[in-house]
Length: 340
Image (cartoon, rainbow, N blue to C red; front, side):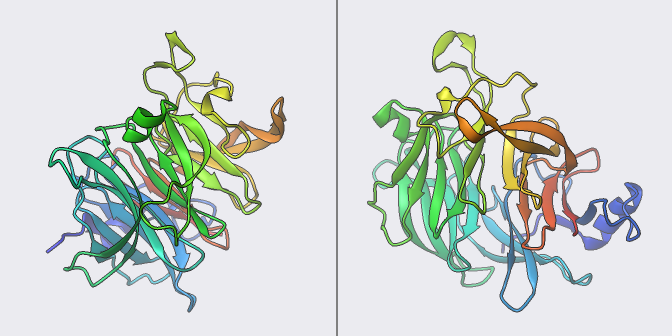
């Protein structure tokens, strides 16, 4: 039987009390849930926010290592988190596991994970598939949409987002995609009806490890890509993080090098006021960015504009603007909420 990696809601309320978060301070984030102390940073990922159609609002997250899909009713103070299903991912590298999920157009749920290849036992591939559940003790059904062979241990991507009824998938540099194309990673648009042999539509290439990207209500695709190793355009210097529009440029390396300290971007959302929010794994914060014009065109750049709330690896937004994050700190990892 799969185990929930949580301390419980009661413990979370105690942590909230220690951090000064109360019901009389609606502008401050609240701690909804505390995860076990042995949960590793980066183990709880894939946070999404959704309404089930009858007004019940859920936060859903993935346990990357245990392979579980988890949910919590955010408005019921007596609710407890539940495992709704699981898959068994391949765990042969530091970034392997159940990596990303999205609900597409209020319909099917899509997930991405590392799995063992068909031909060689030691060949790891990345799978993107629609999933349906048979309960907490049975593996999820899956219908494969796309796969990438020869996946390395890290810098492999794995995040999925909705893109106008389709799936937007982030492929990292350390995969068979780069081995075949010599273009680094990519943002790939997938058709829900395309099947496992679809080539996908390549929006842009050159990515290192695209975990932080989002599609806005206006259809803009923004990214904040990690840096790893030498600069792809000049191997005499180290690469740095890049932030920009993934639907305007063809190559991530065409985006100017950032001059601010690196944050190891781990998640990106559109904020309720139209700004962009980016989580940083290094500074453990969700920070706001104003959209600005650059030489590449209108609305193609971001400028830092303040801090919203704690965030380690994942963030999501409900329709009313309520924000949830997976946060980390001295008291451990928590699910936090900033209500509107």
